[in-house]
Image 1: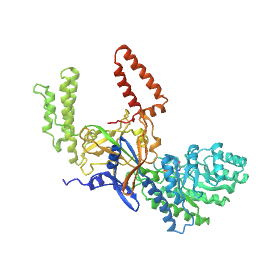
Image 2: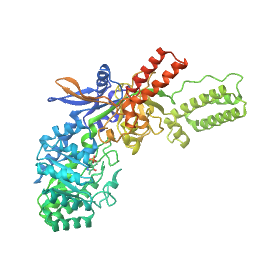
Image 3: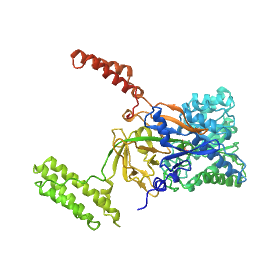
Amino acid sequence: MSKWSINDARDLYGVQRWGNGYFDINDDGEAVVLLRDGEKEVPVSLQQIIEGLKERGSAMPQLLRFRDLLDRRIEHLNESFRSAISETSYQGEYRGVYPIKVNQQQQVIEEISEFGKKYHYGLEAGSKPELIAALAYMHDPNAYLICNGYKDDEFIDLALRAVEMGIRVILVLEMPSELMAIIERSKALGIRPELGIRFRLSTKSEGHWAESGGDRSVFGLNSSQLIDAVDLLKAEGYLDCLKLFHYHQGSQLPNMRAIREAATEAVQVFVNLAQEGAPMEILDMGGGLAVDYDGSHSNFHSSCNYTLKEYASNLIEVVQKHCDLADIPHPTLVTESGRAIVAYYSVLIFNILDVTKFSHPEEPDAPEKDAHEMLHNLWEIRNRIKVKNLQECFNDALFYRDQVRDLFRLGFVNLRERSIAEKIYWYLCTTIATQTAELEHVPEDLQTLESNLIDFYYANFSVFQSLPDAWAIQQLFPIMPIHKLDQEPTERAILADITCDCDGKIDRFIDQDKVSTYLRVHKREAHEEYNIGAFLVGAYQETLGDLHNLLGDPHVVSVSMENGQLTYTHEVEGDTVADVLSYVEYSPKDLEKRFRGFAENAVQKGTISAKQRKIIMEAYKAGLHGYTYYED
Ligand SMILES: *Cc1c(COP(=O)(O)O)cnc(C)c1O
């Protein structure tokens, strides 16, 4: 066997396949993020970042955000469209918008409006709160603010007032009934709106979100509703306000062919609207630009079979072709790419608290001489195990173990003996399972045997709070240790979180050509620091999360390189116990008062002393104002 190298770790965890040039492993075996510092690109070790945070007194788990990766994604998206446009004779421009719902954190919107300035990059709002947040960041009169979602009069009025101020707010009709409401408010305020229509494509898409496009989509107008809307716009004298056509095929679209098909249908509708006499200017192709989470570059749902460059040039080509055929001017292209912009931005780092080992059990002691015969039979098996007779040995082990269990029920074997038998059984199973690797065909019984030998690594985080899609829709995220990668990870583990929920675990991991049921990890000595990163968690994970078991937001910090210096900014302390309790309507003050009452009662009764009351109350208060996660 050759020695383990960094390249083996790169290969095993696929970091160069999914890392997109942003993540890698350094010679010290630590995961790095590549951050720009002026003209240079510097590898920054995640383990070093964590050590810096620990020195500053901040505990695990930590959500790390990298502003530079957000900047680079915006640049990459916009430059991809720019270069695709410059390589053809396309006459229009690209002007993307960021859909706020994908990561609504103020810091994200602020950085997007800063980094996107040079591209007139705008925002997409799908609700009233998102509109209100977006309006405060629309400093560029050339950027769009696209309003999808349901709109009440308050929403419409605010949007119209913003149009009056010179902001390019475009109200997109999601439902036929919205049109009359907008026309009425427009007449009442004397402000002409800029309008768009969302269309329900009939083209089928693939992946988790297939239903959010297509005929059964809850959003958008079908073709007859669309024609009715055009007729109403004509009748009311508002057709000149209709400038944008929108569709959204769904999120994480893995297959370029399906994207092209949908785009083709959409351009035809766009052309028809122009032919109806609407001054069509903008074609908004929605979200869906996928992230290659597993690095397989395939049409599997956690991947995609195209690059951003290919995405841009395919869309441009389809739009150009069909507009040219109809002799319609090329529109300004908009995409509402969310996931592809923010996924890389955040990494969640958590530590391992404890391990339950199922693999490599120590060789058990031989049963006592006078132990029941069945125990001796079980013990004998270990001398017989050969690659040739694995199935037979397994059958025997199972048989004698069950015999011992039966004898226990009848009172012929005591608990201590039974425990020895179980230990021997596990030991035999492990030995058998490790040898199955040498079999050409692994019998079914022995396959499941192998999966029983996966260790539990207890991880200091909550799946429900920090990786909700891993639980809700079985989404795969790249996960790997952030240090010790210069050593071979000899163990196989699933990650169990600290919620008391049997769903609070991660047991599906990326693998190049399959989904793995375990993660390869390093052997961890008791109390040894062992940190694992879940990567590409910037999209959707932060605010979809919930307070299962009252585990709150983790600490967040933004990390960048400035003048050769690692800088920590935008530190946000995670929820305290008092915070999460008040989210579910407790009053921390009241809790403290009640508990103090119990403690005082105990003093009165003489159960504890007044001094002990002081210590207990201090512990209670420290807990109340501490982090919701496990602290050392
Ligand atoms: C969710 C959503 C998006 C973002 O989709 P991504 O797949 O994250 O790019 C864009 N537009 C609309 C209308 C959406 O609902």
